[in-house]
Length: 376
Image (cartoon, rainbow, N blue to C red):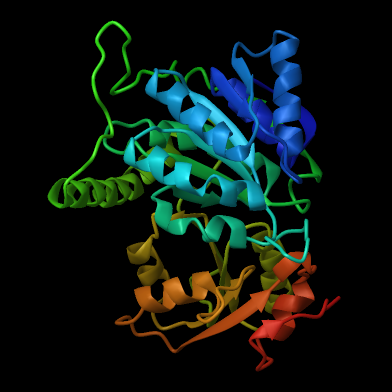
């Protein structure tokens, strides 16, 4: 059973945390993610959510509190964005190396200066080497479902990694949509930690590591990412069987079977890309879409199978200066030995510029890499 509520993306993330049996929330505000922890504070205060709500002095402390809570045996959650995520950077490495399966909502926003509060995936993409699993959502329902599935994946003893559930700031964080609020009782039990700090049996953890042991640690994290990809398919299927909602964890494909031109993107603009595909099909252009959900781990094998012999157009809502679009570069590397007809980069929506179906339609035929103007 479920109830339907009209919720913003931020409120959706909060309700997902509550129904995922989160027991510790660390809170520090930053636009556009602040309403996540504001909603959680009300749920805790009203007695609807049984959790400890910790008010900290910074985003760095928020992640430190989550790491401590997870290490002590509690399911932990926080939310942040942009500069707050950057401030957490040191602790993101800590969370991974300590194998604490925290889940964090990230309302993607540009990083300044100059000061910009609008959507840009560069904040989370700049953290891609921390070892966190990264999911990018395109609807509020997807935010809700993905947070529950992220806990199921992160806490598996074959994975034990923290996970970000990312969604475009304001585009999703402040947009209201109907969301099915499923109770996850059949899908998630109370957190059962694989390892746990115990005051009655203290031990040293995370001390100095010699080179060989540190290398082994990082190698084990890579192997966990490899295992996570295999588990995602099983978790997605189990979720579908329980709740009847097909929520992708790895990628979402649309009209790719006979497509000659395939758009590859991720995040909220993936929804607009689907509209563009339909429009292009009406004009007798065989277009298709691959929306990447999991950026880390990167589903290289799945993408190779889908994109062989296609003309590929990669749309990034971020820029890695000196290199280009992060998704484009990852995909170009992954397809280096795969026969594709062409792979073309497109950079759109940086700093919150609107991305419409016309942006996709025109960008498939223009030679410009960087689409800066709003194409209505």
